[in-house]
Image (cartoon, rainbow, N blue to C red; front, side):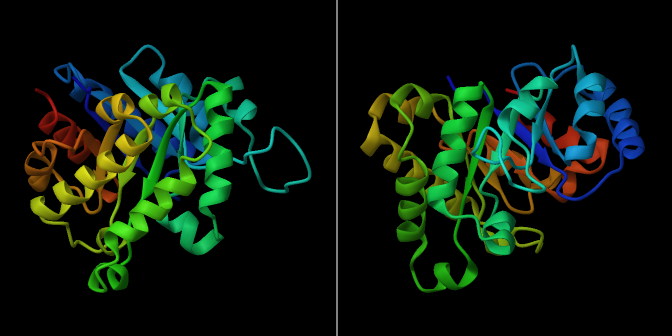
Length: 251
């Protein structure tokens, strides 16, 4: 039985003061959220405040990126050890915005996943196709490439503990949402590609759907057999809407 994970990706939103107001509003809303893991993926400047404010609660704090090297001349970057030192739980890697605007490659992401694993960080790997790729019928080939290259350095144990987020790029921040059929097909395909590497890992790996997830569509998406949670963007910025999505995942 795969435990659902609902992770909110704040992107470049919220100062420390704003994040502290958010967490104080969210925690009282989660008293009934048994059987669901909750994560918030916050900007670097909010990490320490959120780790301290969420300590002892069901909310785990994730960074939005990290470098694969332990240290070095990489101005503006953060290492895995810098995250674990302040008790960050995990990291989101390969979000489409990182791929598009900052030229992250699948090869670099494979190194980052390995570094996160070695440091004891939970990792969420994002994959997904653009609108043009879907229109051209290339969704499966894009996902296959991203997974083959991105997962290349992980052993079966690490793979089983990984979280993969399917985020169709055309649905991120646009208001468009993959239909239940589209989401299930893509997530099932992702699981089948993991099974090519290791069948047991494929049964354990959690696959999230991301892309304009809101309280009014969460229940349908989370009920799909190969969807094990959600990576939530804009709807994670307000405690009430985020808590409603978490509530939809409660079994």
